Image 1: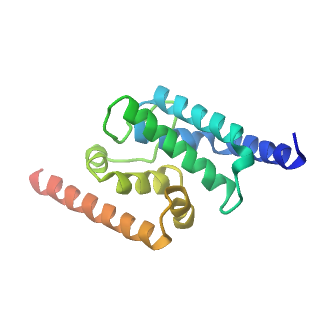
Image 2: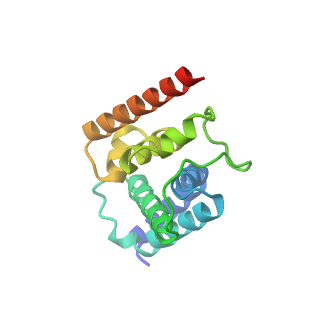
Amino acid sequence: MSRTEQTRLHELERLYESRFPQFVRVAQAVVGDRESALDAVQDAFANVVRARSSFRGEGSLEAWVWRAVVNAARTSMRCRQLTIVAAEPDEDIELPAASPELAPLVAALPERQRLVVFLRYYADLDYRSIGSVLGIEVGTVSATLASAHAAIRRGLEEVQSRG
């Protein structure tokens, strides 16, 4: 194993140890349950470790890993033939506080909006990192998040007007 590959392997290990809870939170938000999320994160890391020599350094290693986690979660979700839903809080993973009305509104968002919301608020990624993970421009991240906020705001206003 080359010195570069050893270094990259150590970087991946540190990233795994430091960001594991965030990776699981986002994967859980995509697939809908903790066990599938854990499997998706493990699959993603197995894939990036095997493919570490193919990382070209055109973006950050963390963004490359996030893309692998999101893709593994989406693949898992498709294999299970489920729709993406906002995950219910799990006792082992602390998700951001949310009202009971919020989860169905997030679940009703188009996929790109949901992923941007999950990556921004569950993983605490900045706009540039989200863009890198999803392969979109920073301006598109901003516009997508603004659209998601507007849709959620409209939904919350409807809920409040009914109640």
